[in-house]
Image 1 (cartoon, one colour):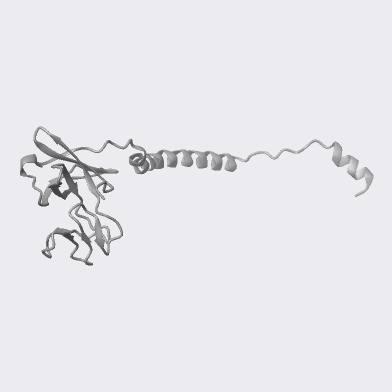
Image 2 (tube, rainbow, N blue to C red; image 1 turned 45 degrees about the vertical axis):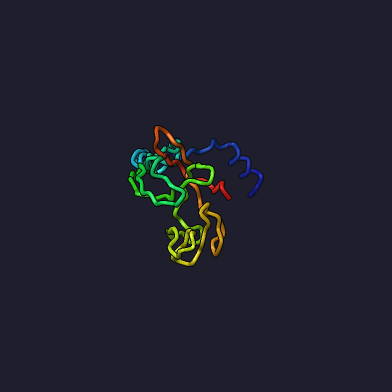
Length: 176
């Protein structure tokens, strides 16, 4: 390019590209479609995420049995809890092994074996122990692991009110 041609192109006004009707219509329809899709998708996202953002409720206490029925020999008691898991509401039946210790304190153990989650039973082999029928795990009356299982049985929080035993959330065993 010669010097003269270079000067001519430098002094020409910048040509702006005009938007065609077709481009304008494309941009307008694309923006409108994106806006409408956002309006349809956002409620679905909110529906999916909202249970995760909801405030966790305090653990509720469930009335299980009269205190007078509790002995030093573990007994299995069944009870129902009201459970809200995200947007799924259910009332599952749970059970607990409830007994009194040497100090006459009531405590309750979870029946879920810490080895692989099977349901344990009391004194099924005649050794005054909790036994797991699945893999032979054994626990003392306080829930201490004796064989197979890596950890002691979990314990329910308990309270006595108006002559009844109430169970709360499951916690780590504080007796062993």
